[in-house]
Length: 79
Image 1 (cartoon, rainbow, N blue to C red):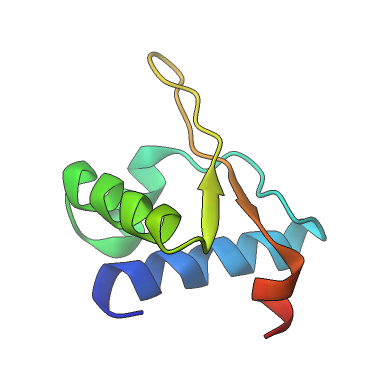
Image 2 (tube, rainbow, N blue to C red; image 1 turned 60 degrees about the horizontal axis):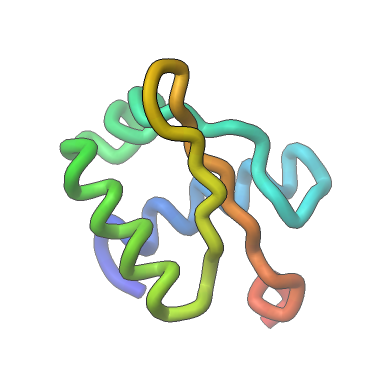
């Protein structure tokens, strides 16, 4: 992983550890824009690429009050 994908995955892992779960708590787009200092489009692209690599599964709520939730396979975390 490189660049924004790596930074996003680290944020996801920290959320998983904090909530002791394989599915993140809701992460709001404005939080990611601020933490990664990039655009929402770039974040969505990083999410799509991580999904294509089989690293995460996005469980997103779209529209007003929208957020991201990510499912990460246990074997990815342990490796």
